[in-house]
Image (cartoon, rainbow, N blue to C red; front, side, top):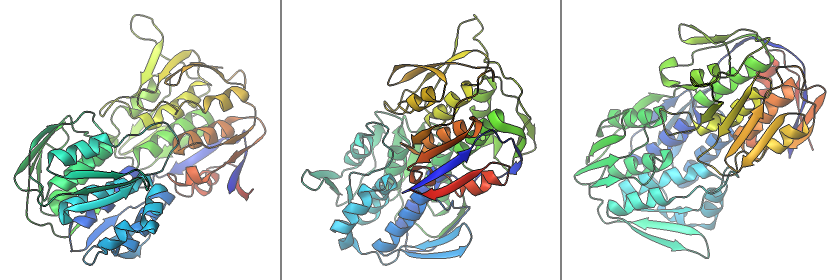
Length: 436
């Protein structure tokens, strides 16, 4: 197991470019299973979760060509469907949450799919009901083997229908879309997730020959087609990494430019940081965050305490609540952070409290942060990354702390951030990767 050693107190300056979007990559790479023809994808992030999904597809029989850095071609013309019932496949799925996204395309194209209960972040219950309810409404049958924890779904012919999702699940919406594009008839999905990643998936599928309308709304209409063909696709920059860099620039930046962020696809992310008092300037498609000697949390119009809460798109993504919480520790004023979607994602705040932050954990979903206004620096500490987003939030805290911190289990950070220590060190950070 590897750890990061972070010497805090260094100011960061310069330019940084976000990687390709992790969550979009998992969706569109899985979508390549829907056709026998080559699909070329660019701006693919070289991160652990994506590499593991690519390895899984290779083991399934997908031909994968690494054309250039961050550019891959996938061709699923000779899949080994029996492998999907093997013990090796089950173990791979258990270690990779992204494996759940193979269900929709496999069900849509072959009429059957198997997947183990997927792994991933330890951030509380992440149910799969939305996926399975959608598949059932399309005509599939579900069998769960409790002994192996293997889910098997099959259907002779998926048939289009009208459905209302029980929640606007991003992965659930993606899976149902990929199953429905080859179904017979028309499918309408109401209460669909409409994040930019879902929009990108739909645009790729349409280039492959699908007929999807209503893109960017929560009501999608999908006219089933008999087959899909090859296409090319470029991933958006990762908006979670953009938000992470905004937070980093606010706390320890001496003028940082975040390049090529695709501003229209960031939604209200910049405004969420502005509510903490962060100054952000737009320069074309770049964001410049000047040095912030102080930043003061806004209040609501009636003078009540600011609340930042996650919500389905175009609301604030839950993946940035951890970052916003750490940034708030050095703001002037107080803010309530409400993490609605995952009940364990705020449990990392005990480490921040040990570092000297003033945080009140109200319950598994809510925390109140009383900012130090930079009058009290965080103390270095030893900590362990419980999930991707908490890991990068702890890294940000360590960068601003006095002394040298150690973060263990950084494989969690590697799952979502490409060469993060090298990229931050190029801006002036002092981060070393060591073996425990």
